[in-house]
Every structure is written in C-alpha cells, then in structure tokens.
Image 1 (cartoon, rainbow, N blue to C red):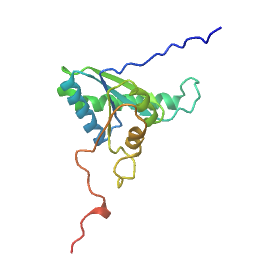
Image 2: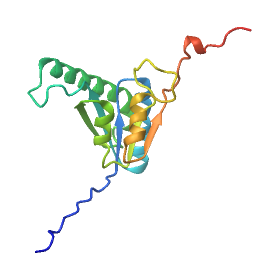
Image 3: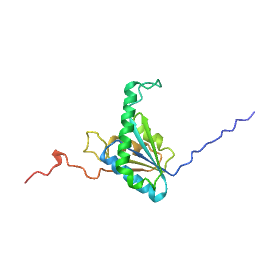
Length: 165
C-alpha cells in the first residue's frame, strides 16, 4: 500500500490591489495612489477597513460590535466618496469591512493580491517613527509587495519645530 497522493492547490495571484483605509489623511493618499495604479494597470482595487477586535468568539454580533461595524462602514463610504470620485468610471472597486486587528485582516485580504497599499500612519499617537504599527506589520508579514504612503503633509510636532537661534 503506497502513500496517498497529496493534491497541491496553489493559489493564483489576482490582478488586485488591496488598500487599507482608516479615515486618516495617509490612508486617503494610499487610496488615491491605489486608484491611480489600478487605473493604469487595469486592476481591481479592494478597499479594506478593519475595526475592533474579535472578542465574541464566533457568537452573534453584539450591539457594540454591530454599531462599530456600522460606523466603520459609514466612515469607509465617506472616505471613498471623498477620494475616489475621479476614478469611478475607470477602476473596479470592491469594499470590505472586517472585524479584527488591522494587520491580520489586511494580510489575509492581500494573500492573493499583487499589491498591498497602506498609509504610513493612521491615528496612533507615536508619530516620530518612520512608519506606524499597521504599516510595519504589513511590511513584515505580507506575501505581496507593500507600498507605504505618507500623509500629504505632516505637521511637525512641537518638539520638532525649529527653535529661534
């Protein structure tokens, strides 16, 4: 009796750019860049917004989770409406709002994508590092190339402002 043959199923990379949105100026820029790249290449742009953390262990959504999801969906629609209007006729958009840690959800969403695009910083407090925790997590863990875009302009922190001589 021989060993059973294993069927190897390889996932095929799709012509998709996954972009993470969190409402920040940096994610506005990431979305705009992804849309421009999607338009140029003829690829689909998949917009992913992650919210909260999966704490209910598979039970029905709680009221808090439902409200968090609704708020994330509303914010995502507003951000897409604000940024994507010039590209609507030229780029296929897909949208997802997923519960859980942003890095995990973005990595999962981008498993079959050609690119993952994120902003350099969201709404975290630590702005003195090169990239935020979500961008850094995506860089370390993604199976596809990651593009990290800064906000259009960052205001200097008070401690970084030039002091008169």
